[in-house]
Length: 100
Image 1 (cartoon, helix red, strand yellow):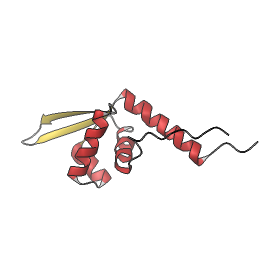
Image 2 (tube, helix red, strand yellow):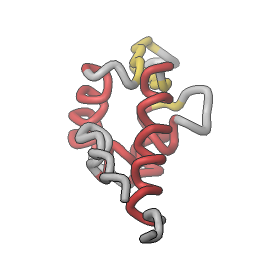
Image 3 (cartoon, helix red, strand yellow):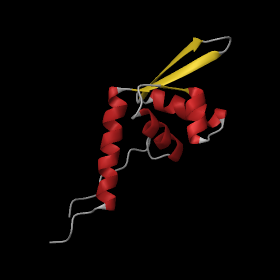
């Protein structure tokens, strides 16, 4: 039996995993969209976005829109790779190799 892969601790948080799951399927998403989809508080979402940004998994850009600041997020190549590896690791837990 193949040993189970270690799960990426940065992605093994429910909110960070939710953020990455959203960003993997869109070109980019703004803070409000992510907050609404994850149902997170603004403060918690901000903290988790910072952790993903510091890990190099997402890029965050800030601009000033129609009289209000706008924060846009997009997944990086590293983030996409790590997310795909995380999914493969989870598959090992869900569908382990049968005994021989």
